[in-house]
Length: 476
Length: 140
Image 1 (tube, helix red, strand yellow):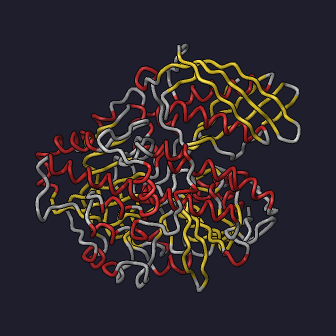
Image 2: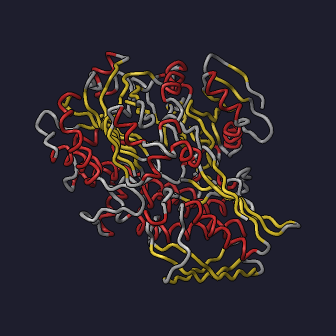
Image 3: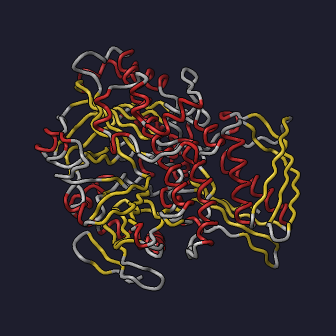
């Protein structure tokens, strides 16, 4: 593979073969070594993306790149609707609008100390996790669900699950416009109906943390972050409803690709022109699933607040506030370099920089908060969006640490160990639906998030603001 | 023949069998081995699945996704199957499966984690001198 180094952390893959544009990627020496070790399989995937019609230069990957199915994880690609640009359900992924939300409290780590066990139990009780776990206390009828698919988080706030102020701290206000519940299949409704307000399984989690380091004083002040402060990070998505929407539309777009003469180097990249009935239908269904995911994280936040209250940790002035809620997997119309394009992010975070008019006023001076979760034993990070991201990566940066072990390898590594005890010895309590989840999510299964964050910061596509250490982990 | 694949981000399996029906049944067994440490051997419940697809790859993905739905959403673990697969000229393939199943018991069967979907990435169903084979990557 032809790779050119452009700067310390940035590389270019020149257009060749069926590629329509150059590709680019960001890596440190260690990340580059990992890519070499897998024989550049993930970079081949971004080359495949660069063959899709209407793609705008460059097709790009973030420092947490790893092998996916279709798009690489960490892949970002923009498509111009006026140039025959496409939309690809496989490029958005199965967990539509999977994302993270950070809640910040008025509590210090010391205040939390004596209540840690009670809080861990209350959170595990209040937020169902694991496969097939639905909520028994709340059921939304078809009509209510349709409204949620149209209106996203706002629909939950209207019903009393949260505060109007929450909506100002969510990407796109917690709602993608243009959602049409009529494009969502009955099976998708069936899978979603009991799963609103649940974490799910796999790498989804809810984590209580504290801030142990501030890197950028001004941004930390704007975000109201200080050392010792307790935070809660929620990672979940659109659950079975989103998985089903993707399944339904990958097949429809595969058919459409044939009709529109779109050559697919990988069938999972199935795509339809943005300006086609099939593309339009997916965009409407994807937006509906995205709104379901925003609503899901809104409902989980509501029950997190309740759990804090039941553990005696909720009072005026200490109330959990939303710092930010952002998505990892979606496709959105945005303006970049004077063009309106549809930006696909598959395992990447929107990271709009200072001055962007889409950001709420409170964050406009320093850029939007960007949340980069790490593994459950080490740390996660808060970053801020930059102008560099706006000019180079369609306003995007990394979304996590990235796995380095397969699930089976992780389980083999965990065999015979008492991970609950190991984490407790480090001051971290864990509550999980199954031992399998803890084992496959052992800290060693992930790359060091700090490597990803240093590369992101060094490349100028994100700016380090604060580091968060885990205290309580709830997993599916 | 079942060979499980363990990739960093996803899991999957490679399967082989002398006939197409046997290949699709291997896909069911491979899915159970992927999802459970100790999949159940028998069950009293019954369920019927009917599918149509324009080609074998789409049929295989639909079959696996149907099984994932039955297990994770309906709590039905398919422990046995009688399959009938027919090629319909021009229209592709039609498929009928009578399944025997057991109720989902996460702890009892050693649950290994949720599966979001089968993918089309790297998927192909091929026929060679040793019979049929396929490779499937799952999003987990």
